[in-house]
Length: 321
Figure 1: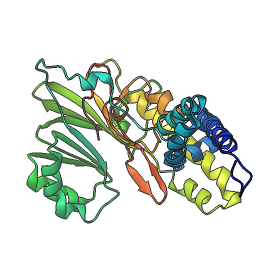
Figure 2: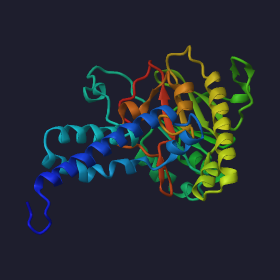
Figure 3: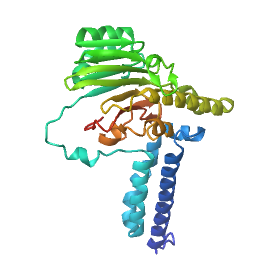
Figure 4: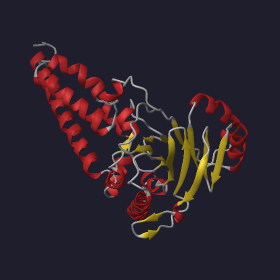
């Protein structure tokens, strides 16, 4: 016992253990909450777009301290840290199949999806970006006319449809917006939300769907600046709008084909109930072959993974970033 404080080492270890067990319960509970409510309701929408990587920060201190607590404290700390890192913050590790790359020859396609957010400067640096990406297919959403004009100069095949730009080494067979794609309930009017490019690759014709779903920024703005009267109505309106568009676009994707890809700005955080409902049958490239948090949008303190690349079982993601 320390004569100055009257507290012993055993008391301090008990305090550390209690902190670890409490943090573990919070992390596991947070994981369950995110898994069950993400974009399922207004609260789930806030959770989905919240800065969830903060859940990892306490474990930077608690995990080393757990070795002094010993035994059950160490085990609880590893469970809590894993729940915070992989469950709440959604840190990804590549699937084991991507670590053991198959040596047999098979075709590879490199795809870039990028919401340019009507950038006025990208047109001046697009040549360097294309060289760095070294992509076979580039899909740009919210593509300004100046950017398309630059693309036409530097890429063999470039095409613009509304605000969707296509740039590739390979030519197009045809292009169709969602007003011309038949879904289960007839023609769906989603002109500004999805475009299908059919690309003539060396391996056959590949349908490529480029999407851009409605933004939740106004609803999230009401939460950030806490305007109580507007908060719930805007959150619910945003959920209904994005959910309706997602379901509509999903309905016009021809699932009978074994080779196609869907890419773009879904404005749905990874783990979203809407994303799972409408696109859960497809493989998410970053979840399968990515490493890290995979954030694609930095909005203040809210970094989120809202841009996705999805493929059916006929295609296998090998790398993603």
